[in-house]
Image (cartoon, rainbow, N blue to C red; front, side):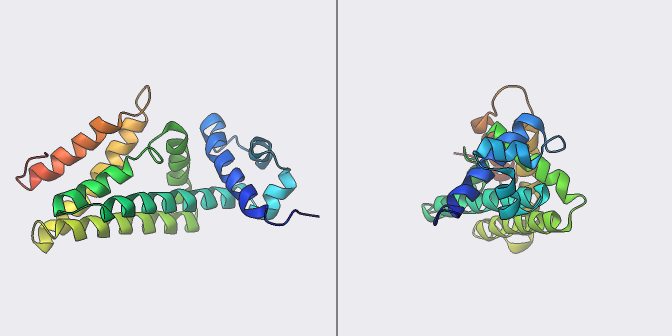
Amino acid sequence: MPKLGMEPIRRKALISATIDAIHAKGMARLTMNDIARRAGVSAGLAHHYFGAKDQLLLATMRTLLADLGEEIQTRLAASTIPQDRVRAIIRGNFSTCQFRPEVVSAWLAFYDAAQHDHEARRLLRVYTRRLQSNLVHALQEITDRATAERLGETTAALIDGVWIRRSLASGDPDTESAIALVESAVFGALGMSVA
């Protein structure tokens, strides 16, 4: 008989174990047994909650996307000027909860899954549209709509590209230099100083 109230705790443990297991073994070699063992639950329970490994990856990515959204919203709420809103979006994408080796591995597995899995591709589109929309909204307070849209797309591409390149470099990801690179490009394109 399952214990009442344990499902959310076990789901969270399985998602956390998925992140760690992907980093340790890679998605291709990973099994539900590996994940369940890391989470301290049976493989049957992992299958019961999530079905197959692909569904668990999607649930993990939904969690990471929700965490990213909360991080950015918290930073936006604390922003008082338009430049700070742009910075909030950039810095949220390089926050500690997202820009650590284990999470990087999960994101890379997600990008790979989006190439052939319809639901993963849909989630990736949600992420990219939200990032673009947030950037354009913030940039419109600084420049005209057409420039905001063009620079929003450029900034989103820079965030994703720098994020991937820096995350795959040797050693721990260097958050501050990654942020500085993106901010320098964005504010330079606007003819503004980064300060």
